Amino acid sequence: MSNKQFDLTVLPLRQKTEKIRTKRPVDHRLFNVDNGVCVLILAPPRQGKSVTILNLLANSQFLKNYFTNVYLIGGTIKNDKSLEPLAKMYESTTYDYLDDKLIQQITDYQLQFDKEDRDNCCIVVDDAIALPKFQQRNSCITRLASNYRHILGSDDGGGMLLFSSQKMTSIPVTIRACANVILLGKTTNIGQRKAIIDEYADSFGGEEYFNKMMNITFKDKYSFLCLYVDGNKIHSTPCAYKNFTELLYPVPNMKEDANISLDEINKNNNCDEKINM
Image (cartoon, rainbow, N blue to C red):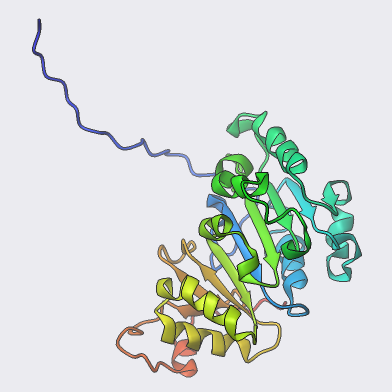
């Protein structure tokens, strides 16, 4: 019997040489949607969640026309004045309920095409806490959060799975673990603020600096602290912005200076253009 030795080196996956073909350019300060994103928008009522969703999908400066298929799901989405333009734009794919059958139908539709022939897709679950079946264990929407990149993305662009909620703790742990973009609105609830800090501060400079970023952001009404766990096209590591434009993390020498001021943060900002929300 031959005792020939083979090369048992475990080889890495071959890297594709072709980049994703995107339908339109996207501001590099935004999260890297080309790779696919799971987004959480967390804020109390009347703090700008719906307006943020509207801007993401209907503002040409954000992601308008980036996704071929857009599904809007929410118990009150058809009666939300802020989201009315979106509901009209995507009338045939707007639903006032959430169940496994609906999510399975969307999943099956996406997977009937090979990735190179598939259209990219966005699913918005608005005001998730108001949907009775949202927090069911092992639901289709929870399973989708675990592999949304493969199902919602295509060779023409990444997919997006977006949840908005009044409370972070109302989002199932599995979905929170998969989220790589978190948009935080102002909250005065001590318990919710502590839960947010416990969940995310370690990835963004620690508790003291994270508190500083929240204070800087929330001093202005309707402002959002935008956390990109996977970075963006400018930063390959976690980064944070105020209202998508003002870089708060990382900043030079922040580890050495725990008392870095707002002026110092702005001085290190090279963002000249501001997007009105």
